[in-house]
Structure formats: C-alpha cells, structure tokens
Length: 402
Image (cartoon, rainbow, N blue to C red):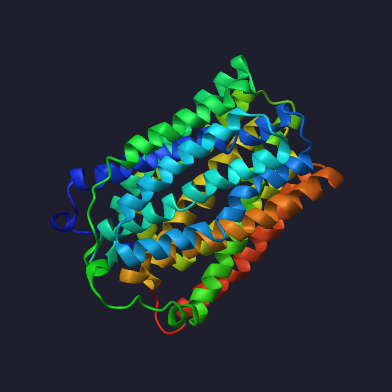
C-alpha cells in the first residue's frame, strides 16, 4: 500500500503535470487566503471571537460541500469539469470581499467561496490517487512528487504575502484573493477532461456502510478527527498568536514558510521513509510528535529558534500524516468509493474539527489568552495518539501489514 511502483507502471510526466499545477495553485491560494484572513478581519476592527466565527466558515462548509461534490464526481466521473465550475463560482463570489457590508455580509461571501473551493481538493486527491495507484498499490513516491508542488506553491505564496502585507498593509487582501482565484480558474481549465472508466458504467454506486462498519476504519477516522483538530491551533490562531507576541508579518510568513519547506522535503523523499513503518504506525508517531509540537508552542513560543524547530516538525505532523491518511483512504475506499472516501476524510478531518476548533478556540483565547488554544490542541493530539494506537493494534493483530 505504501510501496513505490515499478518504473514501467508509473504514468508519464504529462499525465501528472496538470494535477501538480492545480495542486500548486490551489495551495498558493490557500496560503494567500487562510493565514492572513484573521489579520485582515482584525484590520477591519473585528474582535477575536467574531474573527474565530468567520474563520470557522471554511470548516463549516467542509462538513457538507466535499461529500456533495465527491458523491457527484463518483457518480459522473467528471472531476475536471466539476473543479472548473467550482473555481469559476469561487472567483465570482470573491467580488463580495471588495464591499464592506459588515460581519454578516462577510460570512455569506466566505460561505459562497468555501462551498466551491472545499470540494476541489478532495476531487483532486481522488483523481491523483486514481492515477498513482496500480494493481491496488498506492505509490507514495509519485504521490509525493505531485503533492510537493502544492507545498512549494504554499511556501512561496505565504512568504511573498507576508512581505507584501508588511509594507502595503492588509487593505489589498481582497485583490490578492481574487487574483489567486483567477489563477485557479486558469489551472482548472488545464486539467485533462477524462472520465473514469468505472463511472461510465450503469452499475449503481457502491454503498459506504460496509466499509464504515469496520472497526479499523472507525478508529482511523477518530484518530484523523483528533489529529487535525489539534492542527486547528495552527490553521486558525497561529498568525494571531504570533502577532500578539510581537512577531512582524514578515516573520509570521517566514514561520509558515519553515513548516512548508520541510513539508516539501518530506514529500520529495517520503518514498525512502514511509516503507520503514506501517501506515498505522505512522499515525501513532505523527500524533505523538504533534502533542509535543503544540505543547512547546503554547509554552515557549517567545523563543524564536525553538519555535522554528517546532514548525519544522510539520514534516511529520502534517506531511507524513497526510500521506499515510491518503493511502489508507485509498485502500479502504477504492474505485467508485474513492471520491466519497476522500470527501469523508475532509469532513471528519477538516470540517467538524474546524468548526469545533474555531469556535471553542475563540472562547478559550478570549478568556485565557491565545496560548490556551495550543495547550488544548496538545491535549487533542494525545487523544489522536490513543486512537492511532487502537488502529495499529487492529491492523497488527492478525497480520503485520496496514
């Protein structure tokens, strides 16, 4: 499941290039949008609780939009066409950011944007998983080669945006978002318009219930929930936390870039490391490292060198964990289940935890300060560790593979 494919079985560069480009542009858009959205909202005079609510809109859309898009793409097989529609509609909706209509207006605009973009990545992941899987074997090497371009796009964009906002201010945020979505539209229209063979059949869609009834799948999703919930401290509050500690916007961009740099290194070399442990063992290791990372960030974030070291652990807490999860989802949800399986991963991992993390984090930070958010996320990582251990035991009880 985590093996490299023989060279003859690997698709050509031209087959995976459009996926790499779309992933790079999608992640660049995310880097220009998500890390700086809280700072833009703060510049509009909103308080931290309201900011946390608005930042939770993305997570709220991930509770339903990815599955709806995923189910539709599984049924039709038209992942490329659906991604194009999503990109165009998100671009049109971004025009609403140019008007100051208050918090409710912003909430509606963000909802319209995120409903479209939330479904794009799971459809891309499903399409990539289809391309890099041969005879049931998921190639972590080829997947890493595609995914590293997303990390590279994120890193370059987040650093450039940090320097830009430092000198120009946050007033240009709507323009930057619109331009990034325009680039997403262009890249989406470069995707190959190929319909998956299984979707063209007249057979009814495969049911999800038998797969979800498996204990190992349920514990896997529990570990995903808590692990990514622990990441919400980074996604929703890291920029605000660093700003409150006196770090400049340029340095905040650098700190984000550190995490993505090691992420790129991991994706490029992961085929060397992933086979050394089972996929479930990677879940255990990544959760343990995540608990350490959040605890140190909560207590010693004023020490820049140590904070950078914790950011470097992103190679494990995100990159290794994400690759293991994508491989496990591809294994448990093959064929016509793939789109819904990837969408369910987004819902359980990024939807529900995003809402819970954003809303609860806002309350914690307003009462006990932003550091309390990271203490709480460290505790969530411990819960993820316990669930991952259960997955490991279930996978290794009869056999030694995962």
